Length: 206
Length: 206
DNA sequence: AACATTTCTTAACCTACATTAAGTGTTCCA
DNA sequence: TGGAACACTTAATGTAGGTTAAGAAATGTT
Image 1 (cartoon, rainbow over the protein chains, first blue to last red):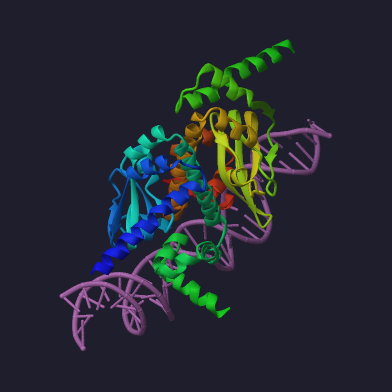
Image 2: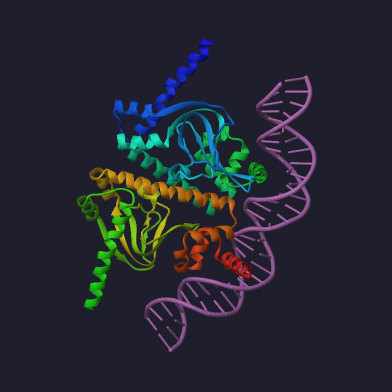
């Protein structure tokens, strides 16, 4: 049992710097600023299948993933799910629309694999902007990269076949393919699980 | 002929403040900072059909539209065009991927209607970030809003029919519908001009 | 180990949208 | 002002991907 605790805290210690490394890639903070940043966050262990955010509610937090796997998705006509994004180690995830507008959102955020996440509340984020203005730059760059990725995905959906989108997805996120159930991938590239299955069989024949 | 010049300069004078108003919605600049900002930009008159940015080239500038109408689009297999975005009065437009990465882009930027634009080069933008750090916040917010709009469009493409996407587009950009040729709208919502035409006829019958 | 739940596969049939092609306005500019 | 280029329409035919349904694997839970 001791071992368990050891590993748990070791892991937290180890992953604690992941988010700081992430930030350091774009701006440089002093050790004091780093501590201030961390003090405004909360690290949380969450189990698979936990719903962190429900559609219809106002989103209060952004999440940074230390370990594990999350997804955000919307539900259509109470039936069909559409994956907006996945987030694994080192990625941020949130319902940006709701977080920014503070209006009820359309997205669910769900834990796909037991995860350790860092929670940054909207409130604390705003405070941090005032206390460490450099963070404006960091989140600007983060958002810019998100936007570019999203624009590419949009154009891909308009111009590529499902097969081409799948191949692109595999190249772009090789680590995710191992972890993801097929239906999640199908939803992300924008086809039904049935068609996805057929498509994969067809691709194997070549 | 005198009249022409008068109106031309009157218009520039008048629209000059559009971009400042735009900025003032999110951050407040001192008059000096406003002048500094403007001094880093260049106002340009461009005629319809001008191509401001070519795919395959590195994008050096962002454009703010004072007057007129622009679009960005990519071309598939040298045949099919897909509209990424439109920009009319008060909107920014650029090839974000290329502008940020400084790698050759995939987008064309074309003037659809004679326009007056404000050009902000990447270089000057970076300088302005250093001289007026508040601008980080402004462009962060701008990018955030872009991201949210783009995410919604992506989900709409995954979950709505062409008819529903068209209706949404009409509600969201009523002023654009008047100006845009149908084929541009068709391309934006992601269908062929032929299908778009058929769809409109079908919708009228109801 | 055994049951329930979820995921994946296969197959028959269906539909939203694409393609091709031909014809009819419009716009523009020499 | 006339014709070339472009924008829009209509219609026949084609197809990528959806729907429904049923069974087989895999996974989780007790």
